[in-house]
Length: 620
Image: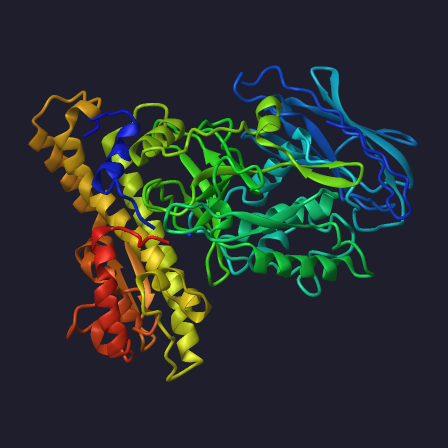
């Protein structure tokens, strides 16, 4: 099969053809105000050696924001590819000092963190030097005084560069098996979070620090608000409605900003309060406002590598949101990957790859307008917040460009465009098929955890029954314990993923014109070879779940694929784990099951089953 080759766009055409209907969640700054002991001046320039379509702005930052005498400090530099060959020069009252070590990230925007030993009190200047030319500088003070940052600057291109670098660093080295119980577990990791204890208030400690437990809609806002709080940047969110089934997009209302959380004697408690307010104000419709809505918190970006930076948000048509965190380049032996992070109703945070099983796209018969979006930059002028208009974004460089490209875009065209970006070079069909199989396996591994969370709840609530909504919309959208432990959205995506894997050999065989095939052979030969490869691989990969009696049950992907019809009604947490994994009735596997959904719920599930069978999400 090594002789079979095709352009990488084909693997997305395969997953698109099956169910095209789709389914489904540098300005200057200085301050001498009392309590603010950092003098910062960030000057930025556009890189000269990066691709024409993406020229990140250089920026540097001292970490923490107010280093104390004797405390180690770091200098973050972020920008274009020549950040990798930069030199950081720090001038202290006693002369220049050199860094002791550094670590870096190599995808655009590139970043580097240099660490310096503790120094005496006084004024310092850090300079970012590229090819013997100073391109950015930062002035700061080392002193004993600390305080929370005041809102004293705008979101400029330099801050956007640092934001992307922070998101990338926060999830650097993670893969689809990586997850956390809550978002604050991520930010409490000082090796990942270069803003850890940036305010020197102990704000990120495990006890007494920030509590961040967002759902998928909240997650992008929590990360953006956290970054803004640390660096003294303006931030806000709009309360909005959920739109309507007649095609009306969600409309924005009151704008709630972070002007107030900095008052009071406990900044950490005040920010926790703001997070709670935001959690109650942001919902699934927030990300699906009209693409051209000037008052939306997000704005649409173009489908280009340069626009899809770490920190870019993806809003699917049915209420799920994800945040891009990193790109893994395509190699000769492995397809490229675009990785993201999302939050689930049970508050877990996990890494997800871009593919049709995770990123749903549809512009027909949905409420609102989905797609890739960036946060609208907020500026501070004469003490007043102002969100950048669409025209201002179009006219400004350094920000991800405003684009209406995704409006009413055909789903096939969307996936084709994305696959060309992720894999610009030809791939071997076996490599692409293996990539699909691995993506399916990753989704199943995540589902093991979700089902396990429900089982753990029932162990401590013996005899309980979680109420199930009576409508299809309710089953997919309801909150409370049903939202926490049911998996209708996840299982619908899982069924699409199964179809994508199973349909791949036929897709290649039936449309050879879409492929670059070097080995001459009949369509049937191609199909059979790919089918044989598929059967071999799915028989080797396994998942293991815990049965009701505590024993472990191993299932191959081949067995799970044969059970796919059972996954159309496997999302109810009132059913035991054996039922939720499709164990046949009267089988040895099913014999340990001690819990089943009430008869009325089973009847409702059969009514709703048509949506799963059609691989369609009910209109929301």
